[in-house]
Length: 157
Image (cartoon, rainbow, N blue to C red; front, side, top):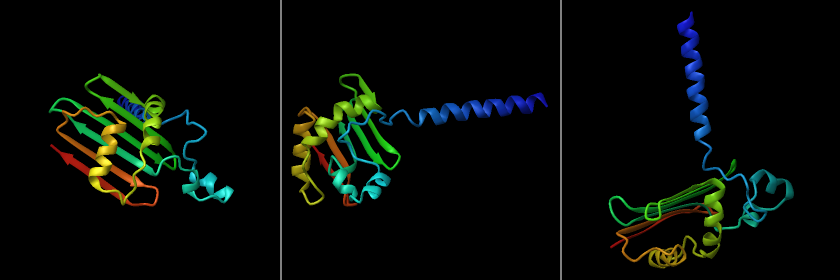
């Protein structure tokens, strides 16, 4: 009977650790002008796009400088909240949650492309806004726009 209890306690402990780790990227301190929860917008009668700060609900940026150096950004505005992550191998910087969002928000506000913007124009804008160094090998931007369109933009040197 003791082995069964021990296994049960170990399983519960492991599950607790795993579930805790899943929420590290979540933004807790969302600014007042950040996108609102869709349930709240339905109650006020506004459409979700009236509340959105950016023209996208998901944004992923992956810049490869070499096999071991990259710059990565992940942003998702889900019904359950906003998640943000930034990893910069060159500056040895790894930010998640509120810290990442605080750094990314002013950059996202400068982006003004949409799903109809040509690939080169989007990549040029991302390079400028994120101050991407010219010696990159490849850039990939995946975006889900507010209107539901999903688009991938790429440049390989």
